[in-house]
Image (cartoon, rainbow, N blue to C red; front, side):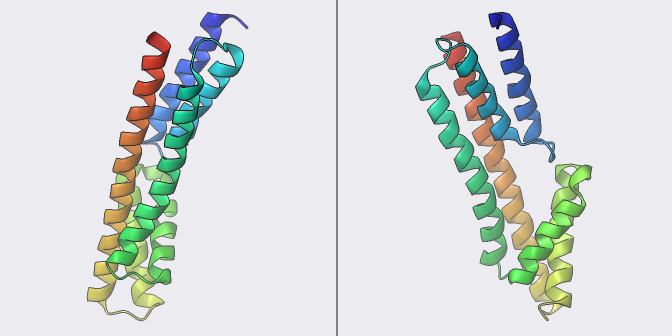
Length: 160
């Protein structure tokens, strides 16, 4: 395959990965990793194995961090399993609205689930909803930092 075409595919996947950090239906860090893997497979001398391996580790860290931070934030402020499930359902319900609406959905889902199914008072449910929202916000911020690091690493290895 022609090198300029491979680099165009690499750039397109990496940019889609950058967008995927903010657009919920695109898997951000995995797309950046896919860009590096495809580039390495088609142009073996272009990127180092350290880059591909490092991006793989960062991708796993981003995915695990999202889960841990989202659920951890909810649990830390007293959410039950119902609240965590409600937060996930609320975020998924508003997935097409972007990041802001996902945060609103997570808060509303946790609030309703805690009050309706876990038997919590509205004050307790609101505290759990705040935890779910803060956890999701922290996980999204973490994904932005990891994706930026991945993009810079990929670019640095490609240029230098």
